[in-house]
Image (cartoon, rainbow, N blue to C red; front, side):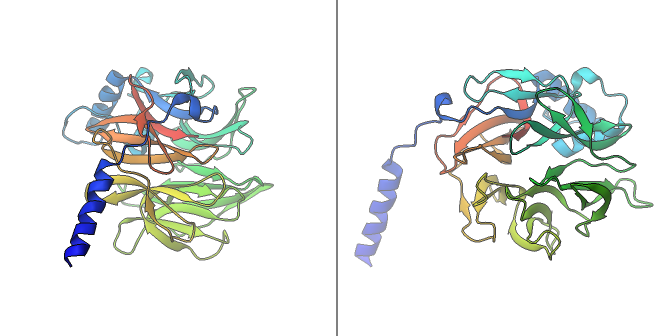
Length: 337
């Protein structure tokens, strides 16, 4: 027993003494740009208060609006000043400079790049509802993919052109309640058909080869959970508790935000739910770790650090080391790499 205790103490001391991994350097990361929503700090605080007022909530300390609330407000509140909305932008992860995506309206939310990175899927408010569109990054042409009298806040596309999107509606007699499920359309078009039963399904993401779909739902206790569909029209399998799942580019991992007693943290797992592993330890300045996106080479994770009402984009190696903030001025939401 004494020897075991001594060995444990030495192991702890060694771990504490181990040098921290060097921070991620701009020149070591892939050059492909990151799409995200940029908000100037003051505008972010103003918009957060408008959201609280619109929902009848008491004003609290200034902060950035939650993404789902932001989207729903943009779809139905004509009193929001356009200047208060976030600007869809591209971030150069090496030079850390921002470029506005002028072809996208203020408040549009990036969802994912196509495999060849020529197109960007996004959602935006059109005629009082959120709809899914696709931007050709070379020509600036925008193609609308969904329409109708329901909100479509999120979507994902398979390499063969199939589209899975979220449809969110208020059930009759419950205007303040939202129910959502996933719908599937084939590459050739045609009528969309329900893929999941709901009522709390969202954040779908195809695997890189299109053979599987991961999405956010609720478990039997009503807690946020992650489900896997493989094959696509098979029976959903709950693989983890968590939110905002995304596949790594090689399809070997699912990265997600896992709720712990200390807050949301970045985790990864194999697609079948095994091999769960925390992606490093959160620095004190990160707060909750949400909305992860994996770099094109699979070596880095960019995420939103939600700290006391502010939202900052940070980067961390997939092995958990080197965490740092990407830029200092302003707030970032919904990163897509």
